[in-house]
Image (cartoon, rainbow, N blue to C red; front, side, top):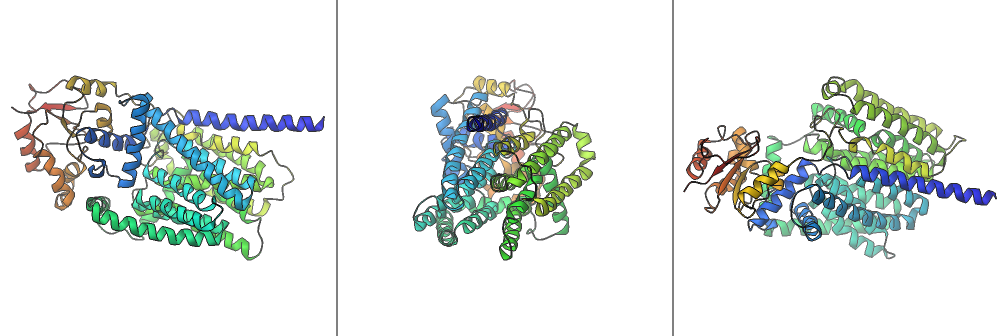
Length: 553
């Protein structure tokens, strides 16, 4: 009888955990893809329809990322046809979920070989949930993709029986972490550190393989895709007029941004305590090695945010995935830590839901105390875990950890909640996009009618008309109007050719709030005036956010 009740309770627990994970995943699938992702998709789609190769299109993202997005988009077109509505965006999200599940399965197989099934299950389940139930501003950003590929690197290194095969497979995966966005290279180092914790021989082989593959990638792209490096250099100059160094003011911004991200993603508050619980399972010098590994890995996960210097919330994507993985591993391996983790997750997540529900002006004015409170809570939880983990007599079954982590990942994906607590984009709510008017404009102009866009990329994704310009969202002309130093960059001169070369363009589509023609250089204004009639009488009826000018003659 006791055995029967035990199996029944376990079945109920597993079902509850699966239900919580599924519910969180469904909620996470409701929001639209974020503007940066639709920017990339829009550029690839409209320039691709205009005959420009994916290798030559500029969408402010490196080649590896463009190829991934183009591949996902091609599969989406095969499944549901062309378009930009909610259904197509959902299909893109579901395609990505399939990739995540495959990567997590490989991670489970690899970690199980060295750490056993409980640790593998905890790490894989939590990491997978954090990738699927990702904040909308994280999902499919290059930083998020880098985290996904870093997980793939660990699985690829550890899953094969032969260590040398794992090393060979890990190298190209780690190279992609670097190739998907240069600033995410520290995330590849985290993957190599995790591999070293599991097997030093595989880590050495994976490191050598990574160095070789990165060198090959650099030589090939430098020779065959030189514009990729020109764009990278110009983008770096756009963000930083001077080389980025170690500055106290930037460190303060980083500290504040970490706390702000923790309000949105409470797993960041729980992770230091989870790491402490895992470390205390060891003793002597192994314990202090664990401290060093935790500090280095955590610091590397923050390096992309500091290096980019803009401190956008999605720059912390890998930190969220790392934090969730640590929490999952601690819950699996530290039974005495389970009940405190569940309690802390409920407490902090409940508080985050209340705080994120507040109006934007309230969040902005109270951001300082809130950020300090979250960072102090993370420190106190870590100290408590260091001294109490493993000593508490009470525990809870492992399915409770899945429920707790699922709950802790929910705040950023709840409908109507903001993209960030108080940093950049804190006023943007999580929602489905309403771009029916833009889709209608594309149909009225004629879906195959070539146009020239002076718009931000997500609008191109909705409108869909082809363009032969390889700068479908003309960042360099737009920024050149505001930053004179950008007019001397090679990308500006190349972007300018779009106003002179293609004579088949029928319409100019302008988004005045993003691209100000009156503020542009006299040369840009003259080229636009020579080719397009933007007089009030000639304008094509369009949504209020746009101005559509017919070509002259």
